[in-house]
Image (tube, rainbow, N blue to C red; front, side, top):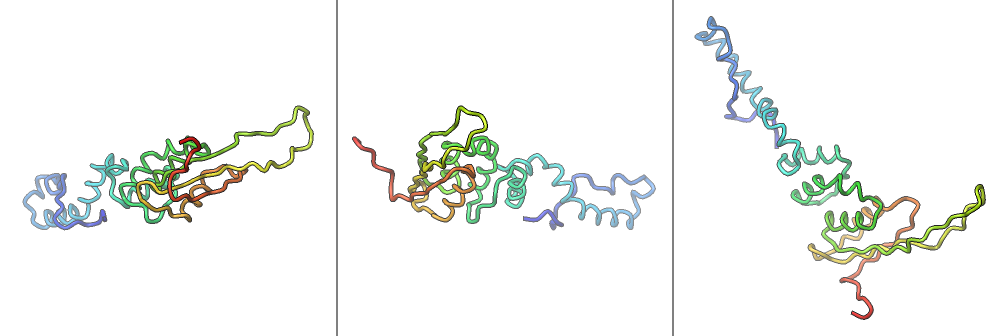
Length: 187
């Protein structure tokens, strides 16, 4: 989509009618301002519809890409247009939950259409003595289990990219790709 010269787009504010009465009947002045109207019509149309350009649900596709940079959403190749719009709309909500179980599950579901669960021990190590040595590195890790959802497939590389971008840097994360939902004991 382009907002350059659009053939046949009429200006809502033609300049010829704004000229002093002396130029109202002047053919050269009217043709000159009509040419300017043709050039400025897309600009005025864009300004008249600025609110729609800033709403990801209504904006042209190239503007959605630009808006995503405003809200810190990384470009995800191959993401369908409507899904891209939804990610931009929900960006602040997703940022607020970044680094949490719920945030990771929602981001994976929204961006890739997969189901997921995050298993974390929730453990922490600390020392009651100030200035003591740091505790030994724990073998604990976060396990992210992913299985097909609405898309029916799982793109392993994109899952790893999203998990890497969403998990805190100090946390060890392991991704498991499952063929279906995990089976619970006693179910």
